[in-house]
Length: 312
Image 1 (spheres, rainbow, N blue to C red):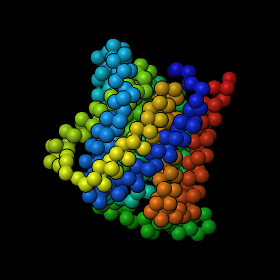
Image 2: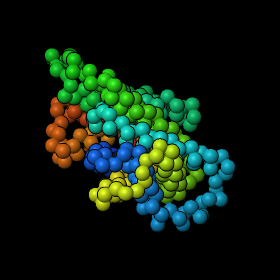
Image 3: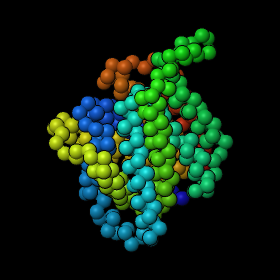
Image 4: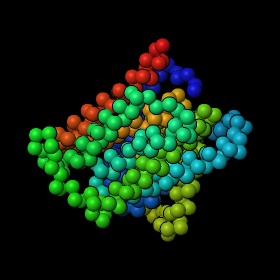
């Protein structure tokens, strides 16, 4: 594993969490006029274009490092990224933002199951404990506003919407999004050992954009003809959560085990809840606040081992 630069890895992950937390807000605004798949297309396409000035030079320098197997893995990681955005963005049509974001951030569950087999990364008890604490926080956020508490026991009779036809479809698509992103994270971890951040990010985003365009054409979705406001939202979605947010996580993949990066992604429900409060007027309830604190504690517990190792 490469030695991390002076820049604190935790700071990079925090910037990434804040940036990706804006995604659900932009998507909800865009979905009033634009199909979800097209939102995914433009998110990836604009992100790829934005990265051109930072990527072309490094790609020319590093393309000779890529073997045939690396190219196959690069295509796979872009494919998984395309499926992630197609399924997750579409899920926001059928279920609540809170449920969708919470479920899609279950990625660490999939990574923790697959990563030891694929990457042969050992998972310590501290990481497992941090993961369980953080997932407990996501569960609290998911039931917020839908349960009544009698002491420490929740009565969740109002959770029936989770199992309605539309709610079930949306939640299932969000879970699929989590699984696909786990594939992207794990494969990306392997490739980032060879490629720089600029080369890897540009390639992954560009390949994902191509796959999404093909899917949109097959489905018969119109690629053009949307309002100026919609294109502006596409740009913001590409710049803030995609280029800035996901690039932070991709940078971290070169220096940290995949499970740590995935645990940091659990901070997204906190950021999304806060942004929904300030922008949409959705004030967080007690469960959301408590769940957010648990997520932060879980991330901290899982991160302590990294910091102690680095100090040693």
